[in-house]
Length: 148
Image (cartoon, rainbow, N blue to C red; front, side, top):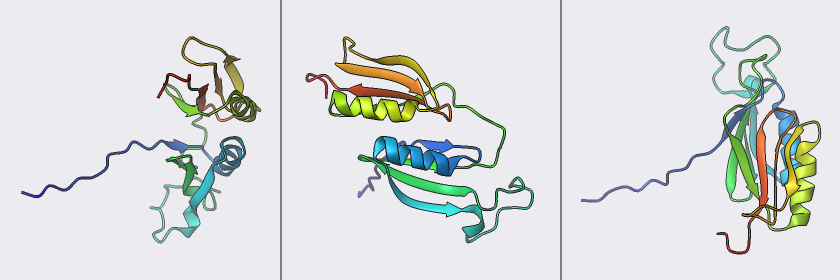
């Protein structure tokens, strides 16, 4: 019996309540992310159901995807302005050098809040945590030489 194998992936999908383009630019600058695609609500081949979009959201981002290293980060403006914040998770971003960690950390922290400054830990020569200006939690780390 032949079985079909499908790669199973978890891909983060973040909603920015009207600030998606700003987030895309931050992540392009801070992480070197590459925009793979972006579609606005008014570009959709099927219009959204009546009343689904708040007024003024017609030209907001319905869906975008960014390539960040070997992973895909999906983003949208969503349909819920006024609902802010991300709670209960952080995105972990590994970089090869302490210099790169400092650059990425500073760029993500601009307008945000540092919750643990970059520094040496028992698991990393350089690790720090922050919330970016959208409230997304980030952990920036340089793997120790013994780490995978």
